[in-house]
Amino acid sequence: MAKTKVTHAADGFEFVGFHLQWLTPSKRKPWLRAKPTANNIKRFKAKIRQMTQGQQIGDPLSKIHALNRVLRGWILYYRHANVKDIAHTLDWWVYRRLTHWLGEHHKWSIRRVLANYERQQYNRRKNLATINDQGCPVFLYRMCDLPITQYRTRNYPNPYIDTDYMITQAEQTGTAPLDLAAWNGGSRHAEWQEHRRQILERDRYTCQHCGNKQNLEVHHILSRHEQGSDNPDNLITLCEDCHIKEDVYRAYFKESK
Image 1 (cartoon, rainbow, N blue to C red):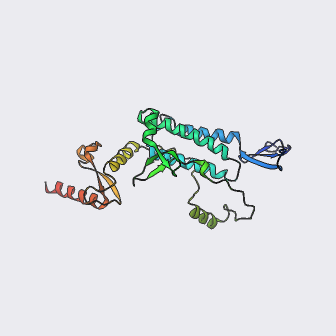
Image 2: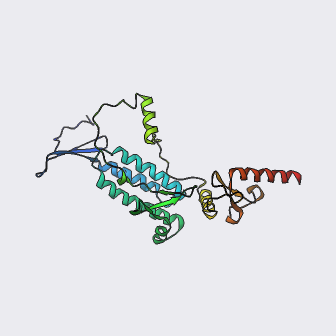
Image 3: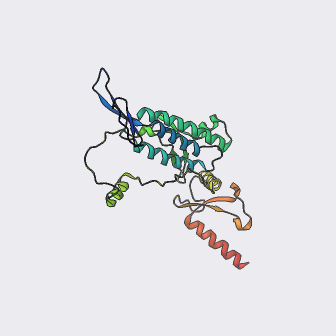
């Protein structure tokens, strides 16, 4: 009985995260409006707020990846609903949350954050982005970019019964079931990952020995076992082959001594 409610369709009701209401406007035909419930929007904001708190650890790239997982999952659930205006509003809200997190992370002003992280996207607007290990920008996902499509009424296999169908769909769409506990972008090695990307950018994503641009690694000139630091002067970009040769040479040099 706690889940049962008898009401008029014009008054609206909530079901599995949707608020459904039958509307009868005067100048158009009646239609059924489906949108996210207020409680689901509230839970979504609480999750983003928890991920972008000032004391949350993590580097900018990991944080954007974690946020993008939550944003994509939320909007894909509502991709057949009347959610376009809500998505625009939430996109702007997430944009501001991430901007303030970056400011607290770097101890920068908002103006400096925008100068360093705002990049042109789709030749029509600016969005927050950071650079990955290959030197390519990774943008904050915009939920309003997902086309809102009509729900298909055809009978499809049940993904919870037909495992092969679920795997095929995940491979075709590039999606996979999310973990119950969403990753918030934090990492114990966040500081090192940020140093690593700075060195890759400094060396223009190129091996400093052979000029290769594939399978790059950041090498300590003076190893950590020898009290070497993460200072940029002690770090150099090498490809995987040159890194192995450098380690072999260092081991041989120690044995010869």
